[in-house]
Every structure is written in structure tokens, then in C-alpha cells.
Length: 156
Image 1 (cartoon, rainbow, N blue to C red):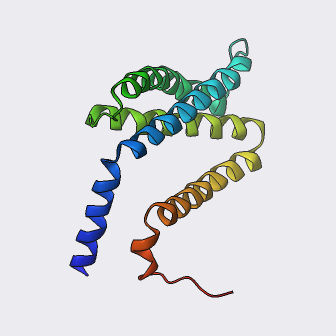
Image 2: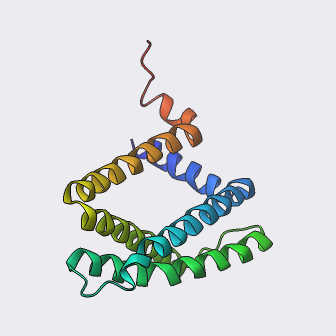
């Protein structure tokens, strides 16, 4: 079991050092950060003139107040990463990515919740399901050979 874990760790390290993979991560990050930033600007606009804000609207506005500047900084950083043809390994940047994406998720969830409690709950549940779908698809695309022996495909 330990040998299997070490082999998987080595594959992940190899994949992370692959220049083509890094270029694809930069491209996907540009799409993610740009899309979340644009969504934040659109979602926050109605709250600019609304007074007073209820709890869900306040959470939405504050979450995007955190997310939008970080997403903009990450977009600019991606230009430098693209120029250098590699992804930064900075822990501060990794933390900023997590905070920016998490705050954007909270902001959108709060906006949906502001419109309808049911819509907010559905968005949160669908968001978690979407992360699982993406993770499963990514793992099967990138590490199909590794996981095939541990998780054999069922025959139709």
C-alpha cells in the first residue's frame, strides 16, 4: 500500500512539473479568474444602490469585496506565468487562490440565497457536486493508468 501511495505521489509531482500541463493550468486559471471576477461585478451591481442591505446581500457584497481584487491580481500574475512558461510555487499565491475562489463561491451562493433560499441551497449543493465531477474526471484523464488497477472499470 505504501509503495502504491509513493508511486501516485511521484506521478503527481511529474505531472506538476510538465510544462504543457502548467500552460494548461494557466489557461484554465485565466478562464476561472476572469469568469468569477466578471460574475462578481455583475452580481454586486444591484446592491450598489440598495439600502439597507439584508444579511445575504451584505455577505454577497463583502465576499466579492474580498474576491474581486484577489481575482484581478491572480489574472495579472497569470500573464507573468504565461510569459515565464511556468506556474509559481508561492504559498501566498496558493492561499490567495483558495481565498479568492472561496469568497467568489460564497458571494454567488449568498446572491442566490438573497433571491431564494431554495436557490441558494441548490447552488451550494450543485457546487459541491460539480467539484466532485471535476475531480473524478480530472483524475481519470490524468492518472487513468495508475488508478485502473485499483479501480477497474465495470463492463457494460
